[in-house]
Image (cartoon, rainbow, N blue to C red):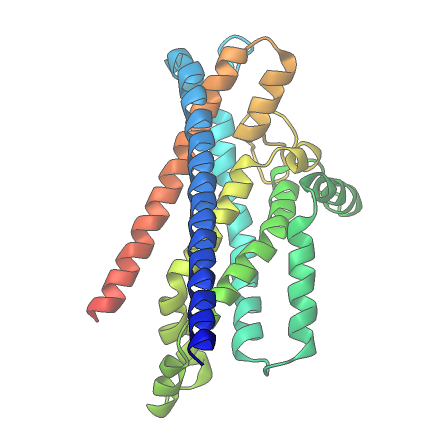
Length: 293
């Protein structure tokens, strides 16, 4: 009996020892992966800053583009316009679809599974495929030409699955007690969604918006086919418009202004950091306000 107890205790000790070793190995792998990720990020950002900051000048911010100043200001304004139009198209659709899937369909609904698989599939499609679709449908079939409007619709289709899925997960993360309390006080489903659930899920929704903006700002392949490469401010939504990412691609392809390409990359990096910081501050303020209430 004592030998059996001794063997059992020894087996448990060896099991705990192996578990401790496995935990240390996994923890080391996690730390290593995090260190490599942060290191790569710092290297890329540092390289861009080192190559681009010395070449930033006032000529880059002139309102009119010429072959001599290769100003990025028209592309910067076009990027902001493209972002605003794309979000105006995709955000209401994404929010509405996510609200319907989470709040208005029953659990185990087959439609929900089909929509989720479709959204995940659309998220993984290469951007060049979206560009070819936009060229064939918006530019050719609808006759919108290569324009700001065609590019905005193409980007809206690209970011729609991202906004929909992140909003859906954010709504699912809201505790059911919020819904039950609202219904118990006599509020309807629509009122509950807009006054209780959406404010509670706003940090997650903003995360999806940030991801969508990042894809819009960094997109070039799809916009070359749909928005064009004209480095001028568009007179209307049916005129061609070059964004910052396309501007970088054109300068790098020409090979005549590589220094200006790095300077444009610095400006693009600063814009993305500002957008992310602003969104994080808004999400933190909303969360703090909700906690205070």
